[in-house]
Image 1 (tube, rainbow, N blue to C red):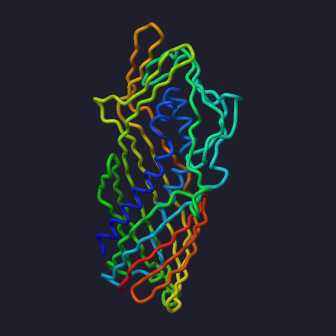
Image 2 (cartoon, rainbow, N blue to C red; image 1 turned 135 degrees about the vertical axis):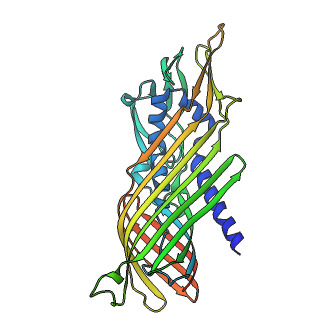
Image 3 (cartoon, helix red, strand yellow; image 1 turned 30 degrees about the horizontal axis):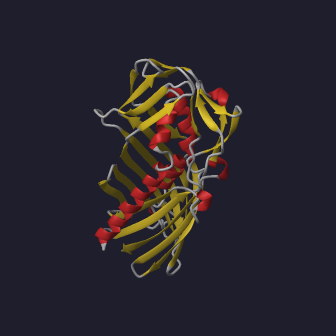
Length: 370
C-alpha cells in the first residue's frame, strides 16, 4: 500500500509542476528572450508571478489537523491536497509599453494581457523594435522589428473546482518526547523524461499548554508549530525559435548543443503558528494563527545561441548565458486557519480553510496511531 501511495504523490507533484510549466512553450520562450535581458525578465515576472505565488503558499499548508501531539512513538501518515487560490485580478496583468526598453505592443501602448493562468491571449502582438538589446554585457544589434503572438496561459475558469495550482503533500509525524511531534516531508529525487524533482520538509509541533499553570489541565489542546518545505525541479530545455523580419533578416535563438540547458524552479515555504483544537468524540475542530514566509525562484540556465542573418550578409553569432533569473517574494504574511478532522478508528479525514493573501483550501486523509 505504501509504495503505491508514494508513487501517487510523486505522480501528482510531477503533474502539477509540468502543468505549471506547460503554458509557455519553448517557441514562445525563445521569442520573449529576443527582447533582451531586462525586457524578458520584466515580462516573465508579470506573467509567472500569480502561479508561482500560489504554488509557494500551497507548500506552507497541510502540516497538521489537530493541535494535540502524539504520545511517545505515536505516528501518523497524512496526505493533503493544498490549493492556494489565485485572485481573479491576478489572472491578467497590465502591459505598459513605457516599462520596457525594446518591447512594444501592436496595436496600442497598453492593454491587459494574460498571465500563466489567464487563458487565451487577445489578438494583439508583441514587437521587439529594431535597435540594440543587452545580454551578459554584450550589445546585440537587431536590424529590424521582430513580431510574435502574445503568449497565452491556462484558463482556470475552464478547469472545474481548480482556482490555483494544486500541491499534494505527504507528512510522516512521530511523537518523540514531552508532547512534541517531529514531522517529515520527503520525496527523493525522481526523474520523468526531461523533468526531475525533489522535496524535503521538516516541522515540529509542541504542546506548550503543559507549561502554563492554571490552564494545563483544561480540556483542549494548545500548541506551537514550525515547519519549512523546499521543492526543487528542473526541466531540460530544447529551444529553437526562428523569426524572419519584413526586410528578410532572419533571427534565430536556440539551445547550444554543447551546453547543459534547463529551466530551474525552487520554492520554499516556512510557517510559524499557534494552534488550538478540541476533541469532540470522533470530530476535532481546530484553528491556527501565524505567518508564512514564501519564496519562489525561476531560472533559465545554460548557453543559448543568438544568430542574426541579414539578407545577403554573413551570420552574426552571440552566446547568451543564464538569460532568466527571477525571484518572487512577498506573497506570504499573516494567516488564519480553521478546520476540522474526523477520526474513525485509525483513519482520519480533514479539511480546512486558510485566510491569507492567497487563501488556501486543504483537504486530505491519513492514518494516525496513539
